Amino acid sequence: MLKVERWSPEGQNLPFATFQFSSAATDGETIMNEANLLESLGQVSAAETGQVFRDFLRGHVREMICEVMAAEVTQLCGPKHAPSPSDHYRAGSSPGRVLYEGEREDVVRPRVRQKSSDGSSHEVDLATYRVAKDPGLLQAQIVQAIVSGVSARGVKEIKPNSPGVKKTNVSRLWQEAGSKFIEQLRGKDLSTITWCALMLDGIRLSKDQTAVVALGIDSEGRKHVLDFALGSSENLEASRELMSRIVNRGFNCDHRLYVVLDGSDALRSAVAEFFADAVIQRCLVHKERNIKGKLSKRHWGELSRLFTRLRNVQGIKAAEEVFDELKEFLKPINAEAYRSLHEAGDDLLALHRLNVPSTLHRSLLSTNAIENSFLNTRRKLGRVTRFRAETDQASRWLSYALLEAEKGFRKISGHASTGLLIAALARREPDPE
Image (cartoon, rainbow, N blue to C red; front, side, top):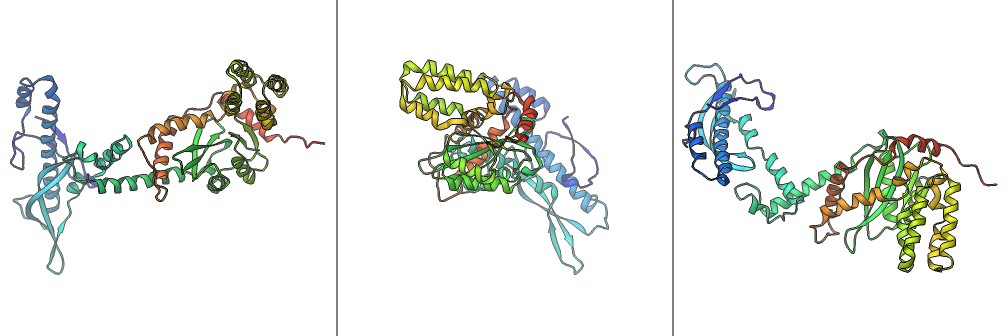
């Protein structure tokens, strides 16, 4: 016989019992026993054995639920054939439905009423029945189906025997779940973490909406998605809103903040408003890509070689030597490329000027850390064909996608040297004469 130890719902102190299931269910249906199960498994193909076994488990689970409800009734009303001083009494039974693996199962539920002091009575909500029909698991399955690419209409096709799978119900459930994702992302207390670096970049959601995303790096090299702000582009308003929000949530540091940007003037201005002494590093990957777009392909190899050297050298003196080589290489072959390099200026060498170990260069000379999270985010957002600006649809989807991307974050390369980075940021540069 299959034995199951009965649990106590919601912490109730129900008497301990072990149930042994027979072949007859309490609702009058026949449930196959172990012998019938083995016989049935021997008569079906390998492809059908899983369904036979699931039917076997479903029947026993349904019977277990009925047994547990009966035990709760006994606790409330006393033994069935013995007088009890309890003010609870049995009131027959009625058809009911519970959820197993997100699908409805018909059961016969016992009913209990409680006498009041004025002589009236009211029905008691059995805790076991309430737990057995809890839709939490089904709702989690629906949300998972939605984020995996199933449309609101398509949920009913994959869960035909489940309640609450109409399009309107699914859409309402996703709105509620999406709002929780937003709260989870924006509810983090940032004041409890020691920060050393910040990366800002934008991800285009549609022709009308762009999200500016902030990623923070703590003193141990761990990456955190901080927040995002929506706008028509990477404009100053969206950037300022983002910076204001993370600062109000406690993002701060006792030293200068190290910031990596892609070259956006709006992002730079927003950072300067809140961290006037920030050390701002221009992303070398973005700058190399920008210059490469202005050059003939025959010059790409030499350009890549020089930028690779710039990423690998340590210290400001060596970096300036490579930077001068870059200028000498670009000046005679393309004026626009030379102006692009000159426009970035000292911001391309900000990290080298701090004289930190070159092991940090791979992670902190570019916005690749946040760009990589965008790759995972785009995979999650790929099924959304249109973001409605008049709703919070974009915020819900983006919050979910960024939180999922964050689950795969690792510490930055060279994280053992973040202490040296913080020490360098704590040193103030001498004022120019």
